Each structure stands twice: as structure tokens, then as C-alpha cells.
Image 1 (cartoon, rainbow, N blue to C red):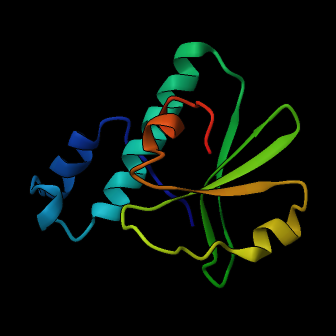
Image 2 (image 1 turned 180 degrees about the vertical axis):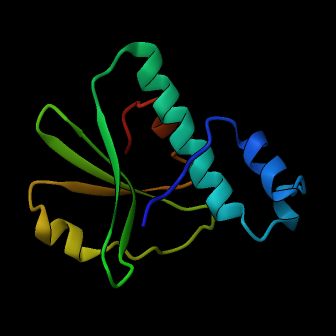
Amino acid sequence: MRKIYFYDVGIRNSLIRNFNGPGLRTDIGALWENFLIAERMKHYEHTGALVNTFFWRTYDQQEVDFVEEAGGTLRGFEIKWKKGAHKLPRLFTDTYPQSTVQVITRETALAFASAGELK
């Protein structure tokens, strides 16, 4: 199964006919994920960075929202709108032991979208 992201989330909203604000949306997590990934991809395109991007999902629905490979390094990112503890799929780091996985929240969103350093 594949994921489709829109560079312009307004087009996404138009297609699903939902222009409600964040407090009224049932799809806010998916919208937030789409927005941040699109902004990171735009940053890479603008700077000419050579980064391969993927998402990772198993048959039993374990998932990493965004995976990138650059310079032989594999980094995974879980993008979350809601605050709180988030469980990361251990199978990903077990399968790719040299990789890292980080949770991206509203607090770290700007650094993620601009491909800056994340804490």
C-alpha cells in the first residue's frame, strides 16, 4: 500500500471537501503529517539536497511515517499532532540497526520542515 502526499494541503482539503479549522477536524494527524513532509521535501528540492525518501509499513501495519536515506544514513520520523508518549515501531530499528527514529511534534516541527538539527 502506498501513501500519497500533496505539496499543497489546500488541494487535499478541496478534494475531501474539508476546510474546517484544526479543532474541528478528524483528520488533523494526517493533515499535519502531509504538511510537514511536503515542507521538508520542498526544502530539499530548493537546496538541491540529494535525499531518498520513503515511508515504511509492515504487513501487520507497523509504520514509520517518513524515512530518508542520505550519505548512507537511514533516519525515520514519526509525525504526531497530539502531545504525549508515542510508541515507535521497534521492528524498524531491529531491521535497520544503524538507523534512528525520532518523533516530530509541534515543538520540533519547524526544525524538521527546514531539515535543521532536531533535539
